[in-house]
Length: 178
Image 1 (cartoon, rainbow, N blue to C red):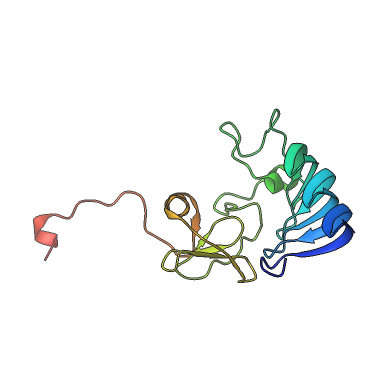
Image 2 (cartoon, rainbow, N blue to C red; image 1 turned 90 degrees about the vertical axis):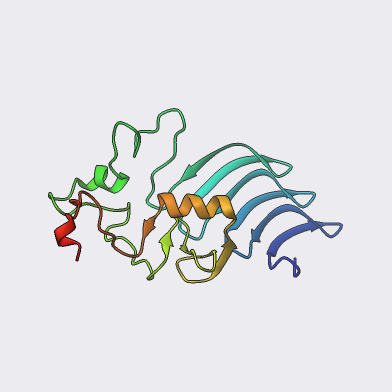
């Protein structure tokens, strides 16, 4: 584990991770639960640095069934998901606390939203710098390098740390171009 930057606290059998334990990844994602032959096995929970968690039944490292809960307490339900869908674009906090007055739109589920460093994007688990192609968590610790697909997705979909003029812009006539 010293090679991966991970840490394990818990039971072992013949030197392998076996029984109940806590496995901490270098990203500070933490697994608490049962292990078998060095893998998540049985009942266990992944706790993510952003405060969300995934409680699951694992079989040799594969989640057979589980439930994801966002940091704000909202539980994901694949069959009955009613938040930020094609019919209702409100955030969970807007459903719980009500909508803001006109002109004070809520940009994220966090209110107020995180301040994004200049030139970066908020990609959900951290800030992305398109010049270095690095994603750092919200405490500015390295998470990962973005591949081409993730880079394009972030550039197209995520909130920017700067303002851009959008909307209608009238064409300039020849006399006003000089």
